[in-house]
Amino acid sequence: MVTQVTSFSRSGLSDWLIQRVTSLILLAYFICLAGILLGGVDYGAWKAMHDTTAMRIFTLLAAMSLAAHAWIGLWAVYTDYLTERMLGPRGNLIRRFCQLGTVLALVIYLLWVIEILWG
Amino acid sequence: MKPTVSKDKRPVNLDLGSMQLPITAYVSITHRLSGVFLFLVSGLMVWALDTSLRSEEGFNSVASTLTMPLSKAILWLIASALSYHALSGVKHIIMDFGIGETMQGGVTGARIVIALAICLAVFWGVVIW
Ligand code: HEM
Ligand code: HEM
Image 1 (cartoon, rainbow over the protein chains, first blue to last red):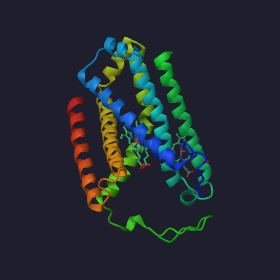
Image 2: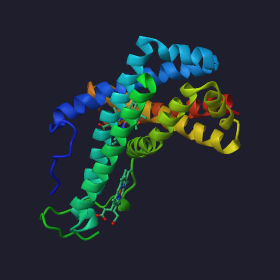
Image 3: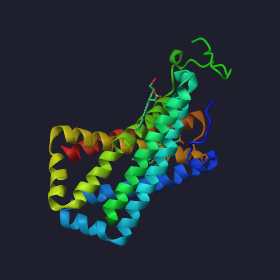
Image 4: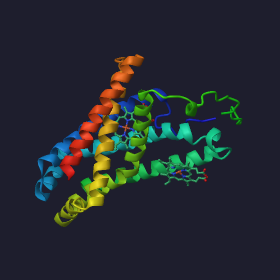
C-alpha cells in the first residue's frame, strides 16, 4: 500500500491547489526570464536587475515554487511507479529513499538560491 | 498480462501495452517525462544563476559555454522541455476549470499543445543557433 506521509501538505486537495499556484508563478518567472534574455543583457544590467528587491522576491518566490512543485510532482510519479506492486517487497523503501533524496536536493537548491540572492 | 499478486490484493486488469492509445495519453505521459527531466536539470539552472551573478567572468563563462555545440543542444532541450511542460500544464489547468473535458475537447487540446510546442521548439532552435 502506498501511504502519503511523504506528500507535501498531507492532503491531496491542498497538494493539487499548491501544484497549480506554484506552476503559474513558475510560468510568470520563466516568461520574464526568457523576455530579459532574448532582449539581450550584459553583466552590469543582469546584476543590477537581480539586486533590486522586487527581482529578489520574485526569484525567491520562483525558487520556493520550484521546491514545492517538484516535491508534489515527483511524489505523484514515485507513488505511481516506485511501489511494492512494481518493484516487489522493497518498493516502499526504495520510494522513500528517492523521495528523501529528491526533497534533500530541492531544499539544497532553495538554500542555494537564498545564498545567491543575499549571500 | 496476468494480474500481479502483491501484498494488497488489488488486481491489475489494464494492460496498457495491448492498446492503441489516444493522442491525449501521449501528451499526458510527455508532460510527466518533461517534469521529471526539468527536475533533473534544475540544479543546472541554479548553478547558471549563481555563476552568472557571482562575477563578470562568471557571466561571460556561462554565456560562452552556450556557444559550444553540446551546451547549445542541452539549452535547447531544456527550453523545449520547459515550453512543452508549461503548455501542457496550462492545458491541464484549463481542463481543471471544466473547459474541453470531453474526449473531443481533449484531443483538440492535445493537438494544440503539440502544435504550439513544436513552434516554440523551432523558435528556440533559431534563437540558439
Ligand atoms: C523547472 C520547473 C518545473 C518542474 C521541475 C516541474 C515538474 C513537474 C513534475 C515532476 C510534475 C508531475 C507530473 C505528473 O505527475 O505526471 C509536474 C506537474 C505539473 N506541472 Fe510542472 N514543473 C515545472 C514547471 C511548470 C510550469 C512552468 C508549469 C506551467 C503551467 C507547470 C505546470 C504543471 C501542472 C499543471 C502539473 C500538474 C499535472 C497533474 O496534476 O497531473 N509546471 N511538474
Ligand atoms: C526522477 C527521479 C528518480 C527516479 C525515476 C528513480 C528511480 C529509482 C528506481 C526505479 C529505483 C529502484 C532500483 C531497484 O529496483 O533496486 C531507485 C533506487 C534508489 N534511488 Fe532513485 N530515482 C530517482 C531519484 C532519486 C534521487 C534524487 C535519489 C537520491 C539522491 C535517489 C536515490 C535512490 C536510492 C538510494 C536507491 C536505492 C534504494 C534501495 O535499494 O533501497 N533516487 N530509484
